[in-house]
Amino acid sequence: MTGSLFKANFWSTDILSTTGYDSIIQHLNNGRKNCKEFEEFLKESTLKRALEVFKQQVDNVAQCHIHLAQTLREEARKMEDFREKQKQQRKKTETVMDAAHKQRNLQFKKTMDAKKIYEQKCRDKDEAEQAVHRSANMANQKQQEKLFVKLATSKTAVEDSDKAYMLHVNTLDKVREDWQSEHIKACEVLEAQECERINFFRNALWVHVNQLSQQCVKSDDMYEQVRKTLEMCSIEKDIEYFVNQRKTGQIPPAPIMYENFYCPQRNAAPPGKTTGPNLARRGPLPVPKSVPDDPDYSLVDDYSLLYQ
Image (cartoon, rainbow, N blue to C red):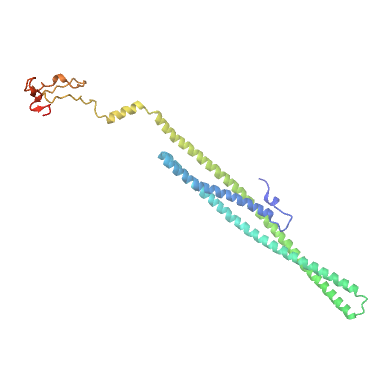
């Protein structure tokens, strides 16, 4: 960058105007606001993202994010320090410029007041001269003397007010030169600060983006390890491993055999064949005590199937 753009482009033809200086200050305030917003973004967003990832991802990925959060907080601290340093530097310039503006405005007011007095005294003198001319043919000698005294007094007042007015004009010109000199210095200082802020802010964003990019690369490397592990996964081997580790035996239970209550023998069924009820193996029925023609035929061991 060649030359200084601030000191050549922020003037006004109005001596009381602070438009150029105010425009520079407003621009710098906006730049400081950008720094503050980025600083808050670093402080608020980094730890939150790290904690969310810590809850959702594997521990090593979460640790990387926590490390990134710490790094970004350090970057936020640097941004805060830089912002505070520029604030203190600019405060000195603003103090000098505020004093220069105050002195310039005060001297301008004094000069304008002196000008008004001077102009009024000139009008008073002109009126006194006209009064003397009008009274040239007056017979009242005493009245003429009063007019001459008034004219002499007004001439003296004009001379005094003229000197005071000139003095204030010269003082204002000196104050104006001092203010312009301070304005040029302020423009140079503030422009240098603005160049420094833009460069610092640009580098901070560049570093931040690089950090996020590096984090993505590290995370992808860790996820790649997970993918490689999944590629080595075998369903058959996993099932075989589970069977070998948790098996309880290879022989199923034997079939349940039918056992007749009246038969003392306990016959086992062939392996793998389930037997059902076997009526042929039941014991003999009880023999009735009466013959079929006997009315008591329905009795079996004193038990009757007929109602008595």
